[in-house]
Structure formats: structure tokens, C-alpha cells
Length: 121
Image (cartoon, rainbow, N blue to C red; front, side, top):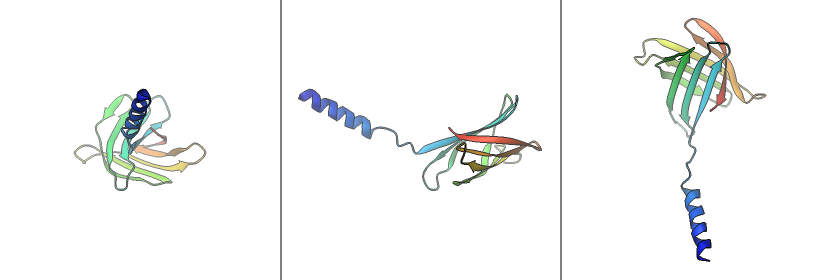
């Protein structure tokens, strides 16, 4: 009987110590041999900020920060700038695609528009 209480107490402890899963993210990627990859991390509570913004163009990682971003049920908008906020590095606008459970849209980088798909990460 003592073992039963020990196992029950351990199970309760593990249940209450599990993470809250209050954060999430998106991974966005263009098609082609030299893809643009955008990784985003954000909170799932009201007014939660974007805590991760990463940009890889081809094989080069570009230092960025998010100057503006919007994520609603049907739309994702993102503007990434250089760390000094002088150079616009990327703009992303995508809409929710119910058939694929993704955000599909376009990115603009260096004067070029490309198709992009964003998935939950």
C-alpha cells in the first residue's frame, strides 16, 4: 500500500510540474534551391511579444529584429529589419489556408517577391 501512495504522489508531482506550453512558433520557408527561411517564436497569451525572429537567406543567416508583426486567425504580417532598424530586410504577408493548416503568402526581400508557406513549429 505504501508503494501505491508513492507512485500516486510521483504522478501528481509530474503532472503539476509539466510546462504550461505558453509559447509557440512558426517556421516559414520559400520554395527553391536557395530558400528564405523565417523562424518566429511568440507567446500564446494576450499581448505576448515576439521573442525570436530569425532569417536565413540561402545559406546566410541575417541578423534581424521584428519591427512589426501581426498574427490573427486568418492573417500573418511581419516586417523584419536590421538590428539598427535602418535596413528593411523582409516583409511577409500570408493568409490562413484551411486545407493545409498553414499560412501561405508572399515575402519581399531585396526587391524580389517570393511565395512562402508558414507552419506551426
